[in-house]
Length: 269
Image 1: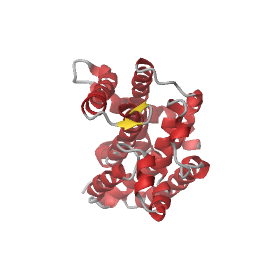
Image 2 (image 1 turned 90 degrees about the vertical axis):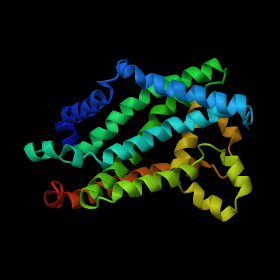
Image 3 (image 1 turned 135 degrees about the horizontal axis):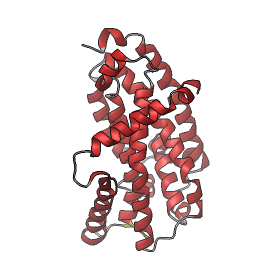
Image 4 (image 1 turned 30 degrees about the vertical axis):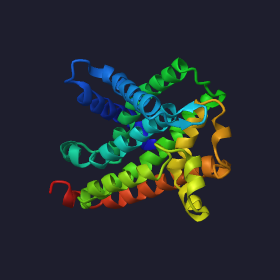
């Protein structure tokens, strides 16, 4: 915490630098932070509501997908960019003395900044298609914080290991692909529960991303709790993700600090 207070300006500058580099060349610049999620929502609407007419109860299925895919994009983009944050900033590391873990932290912060405008797009679609907003939307910052803690822990882990083991970036791609199908993004949790064995469902619910994505739907969509099966109880939906986020944050930090001792041997290779 002392480091974060002392170097808060540096973390902020690192995040803004990443954002500026990402949008400095396009003519529309920062507007792409809104255009991309808007176009994504339109595609989901046409594909799942007009062509396939998939249903998830009284909720349009594209809304069901959108409330999960936008947070999922924040998760994957943060992990992927953080994994390269040390290696891509080797010049800064060689010139300036500062806590190295601020680099993956800055990468996560830049993706968080990029994620926040997508929430406005999601709320716009909820209002346009007359989906009742949940009164629990006031808890949205808490849900974002839980997910961010988990992301930061994983970012510490992968960024430190990537310096020493260059295969990590490919492992991340495989893990993220598998994780996509192990979270209720393009299917409903009720469908999975009805078609899977009780043991698989118990193991599945231990995945913190399952609880986090359900939390996003709960805080955005009014009455969504009534659509969840009994397996999505308080522990699996809230307590389990919080415990995972705290544990991964500490584990990721200590792994990073352990790897940091060997950065000098590998960072310029």
